[in-house]
Length: 303
Image 1 (tube, rainbow, N blue to C red):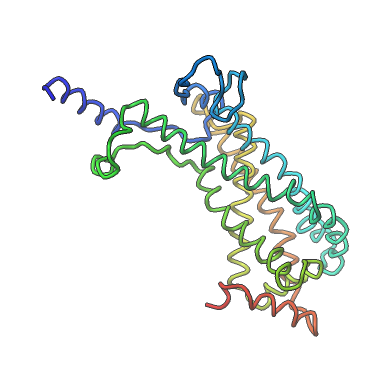
Image 2 (image 1 turned 60 degrees about the vertical axis):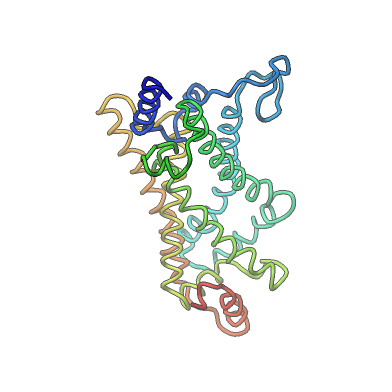
């Protein structure tokens, strides 16, 4: 390799080292623009990387829309769940008085095909499409700056930034995923495995958990509600183009507005969910024993 090639290679390293990729929360038109697809091997085929021919859109276009509209679908269920677990208890001020409202709507979202369509598939699609977008941006950075042939050890040694930066919205999503999975495992999957269904698990089951295992319950539910509220509100702002961008004054005002709404949503959720349900107390008799037998199956409570 002559001196000129060596110099050019060094400049490539420097440019990569100074690169600061924008997060996947960038507006979708920026994603389409910044992450070009590699040309197809056979131009006449005109097929996208997702196998959708003749559309003229890249895989980023479809992945972004999958992530966006899957969140809209899940919002339908989230709204119903928020009403049953927070707003109704906030008005009734009683766990037993709130149970019938939960049982009334549960058949609509805990039966086939509504449960997979409103909950399971949207969550899985949202998470996987987000991960795919990050990997795609990383691969585009490698291809654009000629670093695809550089070993991983060399990238680490030279601190090359090839992965997109992690924004608050992405970080909250990464934190929220295991919290949601843990919540679903405790209140849906665990009863289904050991009792054949969750018809006997309601708000009283949650109240019993707060009374018997306060530290785990308060920590888990506070984190779940706080992170979920922030992720939902910032997600709505992202999809509707309300992110804190533009001049400094406008960006600052939007930042405070988005965070203010996030705090307000979390406070409303906690007012009923933690203010009423958490204080419902333990269940007695055979019902309480049934609840405790389920909680005993949770690995975290065995530590």
